[in-house]
Image (cartoon, rainbow over all chains, first blue to last red; front, side, top):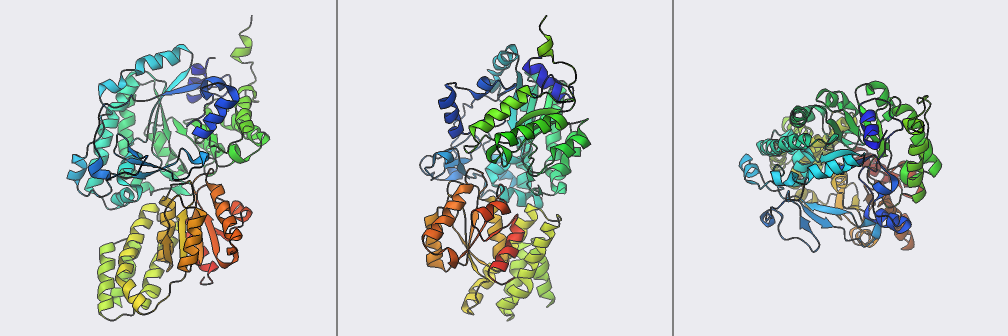
Length: 371
Length: 212
């Protein structure tokens, strides 16, 4: 099997020759610099031979001025296309180089009209999809699977503009402002999902963090009212445009309580399944016939703080149980942070590539390829 | 006292306007502010914390209750100060050096304030020097440290070590929390306490100042 066949088999709940893997959110800047210094290579995905690559929307040509919304910014700060201002950390520690605070441009807005008047970005504009066909074809020609990224889909991008506390209170208070804002975002995401699906990636990754490590961020009632129907619309648009594209959904935290409803609206792959608060083994037992898992290797526990043997043990157990019969794409649950030991990264890659699980009794396609 | 029950309910249900209005009329009617705080408002926030622990309330409910508490507190605060009332304790709280995540820290601060503590919020990306400064100038009983990332957890240890180096570690209680932080880690770095969430942080803080 090549990488693409491997990913497709596993995410479609068929047994792959081995469990596919990737680095999820990639390497933090410090870790990437370490990687380059150690290996002389540029790209961890190419160097380690991960099985899937990501594509995303091209850059915007809009140059919206958000100064009326965010005020004067401190040095080093900038606004993104949604108007959220990014403020770099004051710390000069190398480890902290990728950390930033936010200023929320909608923090003082109040009415539905305010939400209508706000300049949203042109994520639906055709020119932003122009380079994607060639990128996707390029990866497919190399035998790689492709995921089209559209995480931070509705809720998160809304709170990136509004502020999380304010938006959560809006939800509880049936705010017309929030309703208008979410409707406007969803309308654009529906177009984006349709366009992405038409371009033929293997997976579309949606995502909004709605879990905390002690359970849901908001009640299931609020999630059902505000987010579930809108997420369902986005998924339906992708599905209608391309019945074969796999729908993955990312949320941090423990969302065990929402899993049946995510499946109900068409989610086929759940990411990242943080093992510190969500049990991938129990999920496999309960939903493994309907849902695949992408992630499961803890970036708050084993990866930074375990030994290479701990990493191997965690991976083997996941391949044996969660990967049984397919249904797993192994990855760290978040960015590979600066404090992750190099030996643990090597142990992760080596184990996933070489471990032969007991459920794979037949020889692999790779080993039977010889005459 | 029927009115006061309305204040209790307004805080539990997160109705800030009613909470403020009832607090105002209670003060005008001569209800002692200390009584309002201790018998109505703090018990209301304790109930909010209980509902959160029981998974009946989630973060949005905590937020609107904390806002109602805040509005009522703003009404009675000048009267509390005029009457010489003391808070349950003073807490200097911040997200540690390098880390800019503040939602968890803000929730803990709001719940502690609802529990009768005075909060000195140092914000995010806060180093040992700022915590020490707050300790020295503000008569702080508790220093509360927050971190969201494994990358910034070591800043917690550095801050505790700086309190030791300054010879004041035993003069103040230091508590820690945040997604990757565990009770074991809190023990390792020599913190006085760890809380898993904003509600139990109140119980922890009370036990450390002997008010629990």
